[in-house]
Image 1: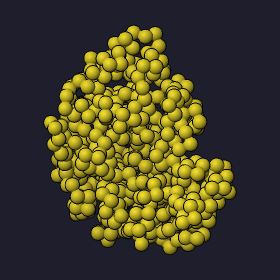
Image 2: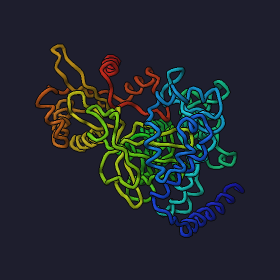
Image 3: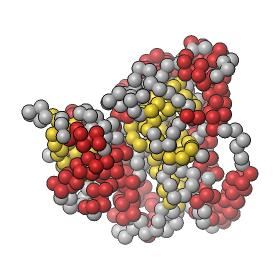
Image 4: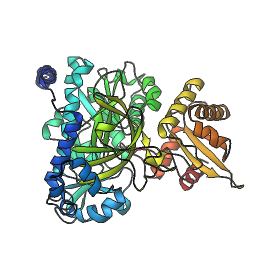
Length: 511
């Protein structure tokens, strides 16, 4: 009772303080100036590292145009280039790409062992993610949430917070690293708590969450849509509920991230009895880059003064080839030259010791004051084997259109370009739904929708792309496949575009 009283008083103070801080806060620098200052701060901090000495950061800081000098001197790196030349050494020695030796390395989602990507996580980087989180909290008055929301708890569905020791550092997925670094006072409102979060096995962790659910007063949830929805369905089923609000009546906020939310909206609506405010976030192993800062939009405000310097490569013939791979000398611009509704490959330099690093995501700007973005897909999820030029964003839109027409719930899907025995190319789709789906009708409308929305796809379908196939599988089979592929868990991003080998293995598993 005493704790509730204290939390109630604290909630009033927090909401009032956030509102006052928002009114008093103002930024006099332009976005261009903020980004230039960020680059200078990064170069200054790392000028005595091996990387900084090799590329002459001290000299770059003296240039009249530091951004142009940086771009001319330092090449663009993908993970394998950065790791082979620098990060693999940073696991053993200090002062390689950032001062000191990182205490943590983030493993890429869904992989373990030697094959996993390992991205350095410095103390400054952890602080940068907290700073972006603070900026998100400062934006909450824009949503006009009731005071009672600040008295509730937040459920964060992360990867396991149990980290492994390796060569003097700890490693795990970024969400697990973040959870393991929560200060003690987070225990007041953070659920499921450190003990449950440290459970390695995803199914066992969800089982414990389901058991504890009646004891919590959840007002907000954060996590990747597919796995959050799976967890919520398990809670509803286990406690024989009509909807999730029967057990958590104060649930009002869902902080999404990792993948596009829209294909999951119908699933969330089906298990809720009150509207959820959706706050989208762009939080990756490489940084916390943006967040929804105002209501009635899924666009996210870019964090311009939080330890990141951004560059943008047009996702067209000026920057990439027909398969979405970067050109040898792509056009690269900074925040001052971006345009609305143009796709860009995101390049980041950060306080983790990443320099001109290719994230692998494609974004587009929906607003320039402030700078707001949407993630339109991954460069590797660009399906263009025979010139179809299908982005993840276009495929999501087509799936949503056909879902609405057929009144079915299809959240997950996968597609690949395959060849038949006559060496004809075709697109193989697999859609995931527990509804009764007329696969032939769904396939035909999906094909027509893509033709109408994408002229390149229409041309391809008249030439090299001879036909499409579509297979329907249920959610249980799909999750069994992810489990067998070791792709099951709170922060795992399930693949939408597969190569031939993976698609044929998926089809074999379903059969």
